[in-house]
Structure formats: C-alpha cells, structure tokens
Length: 441
Image (cartoon, rainbow, N blue to C red):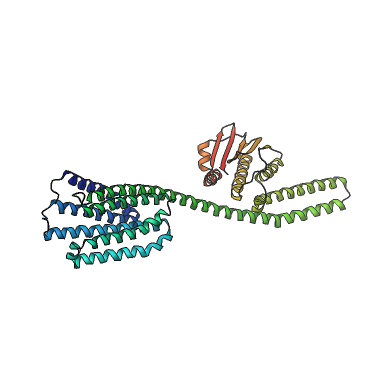
C-alpha cells in the first residue's frame, strides 16, 4: 500500500483532472458529430479514469496486503486496463476508416482484440485465483495486446503523409514507450509504484497528441465542408451555364435556319428585281435595300456564332473579344478600343465562356444605359493570372442602387468568384463605369 505519498496522490489527481478535462470536449464532439471515433474515445477516457481511480482506492483505501478485498481490487484494475486498451484500439481503428475505407482490412485484427478482451474478462470472472497467482499469464496477455496494437501502429506509420495520422502515430509511440517502461518497472520492482507513474505520463502525452488530432480534424472537416459547398455552387452555376448555352444554341440555330433563310430569300428577290427593273431610281433603291439585307445577314451570322459554344471552344479569348468589339463598331455609334499584351492567351472553355459573357453583358449595359461614346477593353496576361478590364465614358450610376438590383452584374460577380477570381465594379456619375476581373491561371 502507498499511504500519504505526495507524489502518488499528486499524480493520481493530476491525471484524473487532466482526463476529465479532455473528456468534456470528446463527449461534446460525440454529441454534435455522432461519430464512432469520438464515441470510442469517450469510452477510452472513461475507462482510464476508472482505472486510475481504482488504483488510487486500492493503494490508499482499506485494502490490506493479501486480503480478498485487495485481490478483488487488483482484478478490477487489471480488467479496466485491458478494456481501456480495447476502447483505444476501437478509437484508432475507426479513426483510420474515416480517413480511408482501405483500412477496413484491419477489421480482423480489431475483432481479434475484441475476442481476446471478452475471453480475458471471462477468465477474470471465472478463475480469479488463477489471474492473481499467474504472473506469466499477465505478461503473456500484455504481449498479445502489444502485438495486435503493432498491426495498427505499422499501418499508420506507412501513411504519415496524412497529417492526421502523424498525430495518431506520435500518440501511440508515447503510449508504447511509457507502457514498456511501466511493464519493465512492474517486472523488476524498481519503484514502489510498479510502473503506474509511467502509465500516467503516457496517458498525458498521448492525449495531448489526440487533442491536436481532434483540433486538426475539426478545422479540416470545416474546410472540407466549405470546399464541398463551393463545389456544389460551382456545379449549380455550371448547370445554369449549360442550360443557358443550350438556350443560346437553340436561339442561334433558329435565327440561322428560320430568319436567316428568309433574309437570304429576300436578298435573292431584291437581286432579281434589281436585274429586271430598268428604272435607275428604283434600281438604286433596290440596291440600298439589298445592301441593308446583306449587311443584316452578315451581322446575324456573327451574332449566331457568338451564341454557340463551338465558337468559344474553337477560338482563343482575344479573337472572341475582338469579334464582339467589331460587332459593336459596326453600329457606328461607339469608338471601341481593344488592348492586349498577349494575343495568344490560351484559357479553359469555362473561363473563356465566363469572360466573353461578361464582355457581352458590359457592352449591352453600355449601349442601353451608359450613353457613352468610347469603350475600352483590355486583357492582360500576367503569367499567373488573367486580367480583363472594361471601361466606358458614360453617365455612370448610383453604385448601391444599381448593384443591388442588377441581375446581370450579380451574375458576373458570382461566376468570377466561383472560379476563385476577383470582380471589381467602379462607377461614378458623369465619369463612367469600369469592371475589372482577375482570374488565376
């Protein structure tokens, strides 16, 4: 018995306090996440607390040497130690499975651990005297626990690229090291504590590592949730883009096949009238009408090309933007300048689609609302990013009102942000409007 020993009492109460403190977050995590990892860890902490309390009561309570009561308490301590090892194994096993399903291959080792623990408990209950006098059986049982644990330890050690596993590996290393010291001390009786102090050291350092693992997992899971939400939004936008593109394709085909055919037929009729008519005045009017129809046909073909996804996929971004600029120039109402430091910039289809739609939206807004005379489009290749700048010298607008109600502007910003880009909109009354888009490449 260890009576009134300040070190023994101190290490017991310190361990109980520390494990109680660690137990609260584990229970909270289990409550919020309903995970086997946190559930097994909570049971592990509880079994350790009961183990230390049982050791403390055995050594400081009314349990005389070689008494039945002391033998009973020793069996309780022994059983709790084995069950804590099982809960520890369950915690490690489920933590590995959550990381990767391939670790389900360790299920046989885990089931073997369960079977051994149940058998050991049955032997304690049915043959308590055998457990008490058979020290070789005690050593043999600990060796089995070590061997099964090494299976998990080895597999974690092979996957140290995973940061979470590094915490687990370090925790098990501490437990093995101090567990070995405790077994060595209890075998040759170096100290009066028979290795108990080493177990307490091991519990402290291992659970410090586990706390680090939980903190890492919590923030990592939070990041994964945000990434998943971002991917989901990206899929939504992608689906909307596909639907929008299908609509534009259908509009483009309808314009080409229906309106285009009728305009072509009208052009042929005017050519025939021009040929048949002998009056110079009427002939001149027919020529003007024919010219207008042909010009409309040409613009319509350019417009339908800009609608189709094939046009975007087959052309580089400079050519696509130049086509849009040329289309606006043909209106003869605006001076459009296109600036570019690299006309051969290659971008993914989705990036090109978003950039060209932003250009089209900006042109549309400038034509309808800005009352501008000059539009400047600049696209720059900055090696690790692409910058698109759109500027007009129109009347500008009240930023808050228009930006809140403008669906087109919101769509621009949303699309850019889903590609992890930045969208900057600036507008001042009587000065003009500027949009700057920056995308990483």
